[in-house]
Every structure is written in structure tokens, then in C-alpha cells.
Length: 272
Image 1 (cartoon, rainbow, N blue to C red):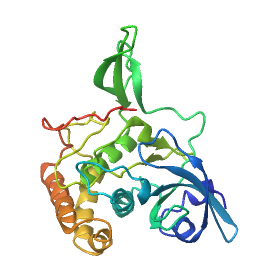
Image 2: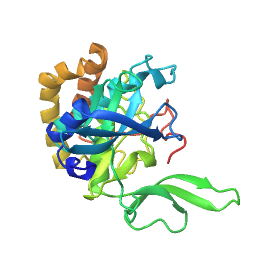
Image 3: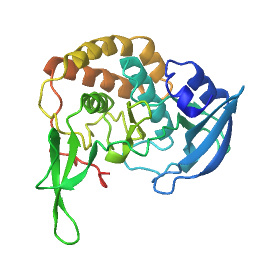
């Protein structure tokens, strides 16, 4: 079974077993990543898949997140995503590898003809049903807009980011898989107890949440208070889990997408 074969099975079955127990061979390093990020191949019982392996020892210290915790936050983001039923984050586990313990996430192959959903577009020709988020100019002074599609799949990802307090939702962290499903990746700087939401998906700011999101948040709140909270305790502090529950409660009560903070940069840099 290839990676495209297991990518559809995000229910804790074949993909998670392969990620946890498969033999991991490193193919190379993704040099654009700020932390050590390696692409590898997993093999187990005739199955194989590519993965992204991020060893804890390759994490650069951050001033606002405890050292050595980013890999666990990647796993926590997957656990929350799975609990929503939306399966936006590819299957992710914490396991040992060639360079020690780290997060291991199923690799998502984007088709060559996949239409981008986030990017810079000429300021005077933003596509219909796209939201302009920020203004920019190139070296020649030509005006562009950072924008994203008004797509319900992206709206779900924006809700997930608000739940996990994602501080780094770049456009390049939004992938479209071969099954035309949206996947969000790179969640190492999430779940902080302070408000740090930083994203390129501000198009729905202040608008009412979709009905399915309201229903999901109610279910998620109950899960955080139960078995999900116990799973998350392996990767997050009790304070971070309590604040996760509080964010879910605030979203439920407001029924609206959050607004950008005035005390924290609203868009990550670089945004793509």
C-alpha cells in the first residue's frame, strides 16, 4: 500500500500503524524549514508511505514555547483534528527514529494541477469569491493582494486554527491532496495559553460560524473534558488543555470566527 492508499484511512487504522511501527528510512532534508524537517519512507508488512519526520533534537529554541515541545504539539493538533471528524491534519504520531524521538506525519502529495487556494494575486484582479487579506508590492512597485478562496474547506481549517491557537498558518501549510481534500500541516507552534493566532485565513473574521462548526465545537468540548483531554495530557500541560477548553467555549458562545488581535502580528512572515 502506498502513501496515497493509506492517506484515506485517518481513523487510527493502517496509516497510524505504519507511522508508529514502520521502519523509517530518511531520504533527505526539507531545507526551507526553520527546524530540522526530514522526508522519509516507512515500510511495514508490504505497506509503504512517505512521511515527514521532525526530531525533537532539531527544534530551534523559541522565546515563547518550552524547548522540546514542538513535536508533541504536532501530535496534539492531529488528535484534535481527528476528534472534530474533519480530518484536516494528516495522521501524526510521536515515535523514535534515526535521529531520536520526533513527530512523524504522513506525507501528502499535491497533484501538479492542484489549484492554489491561498496566494498573492494582482491587486486589481482578485478572483471572484476570494478574500483579500493584506496588501503588498513587488520590487518593481506592482501592487498585489495576499488573498484566499472563500472555500468551505478552508473555513473549517480556519476554525481548527482558532481552536488550537495556531501561531503559524502560512499559505504553504495548506495542502490539497490527490483526493481534493484540504490538509493543514506544520502545527508545532500551537496550543499556547496566550492568544497567538496568526494566519493567512482571515477572510471570515467576525462572521458567523457555519452550522456544522457550531455542532462540532459542542462535541469537541465534551471530548476535551474526557478521553481526548487524557490523550492530550501526554503532549500538553494541564494549563494548555484548560485554555484549549476555554477557547472552544468562547467560540461556542460567540458563534463567530475570531477577529485579528491588536497585540500580536495577525499574519505570519513569510505568509506563504
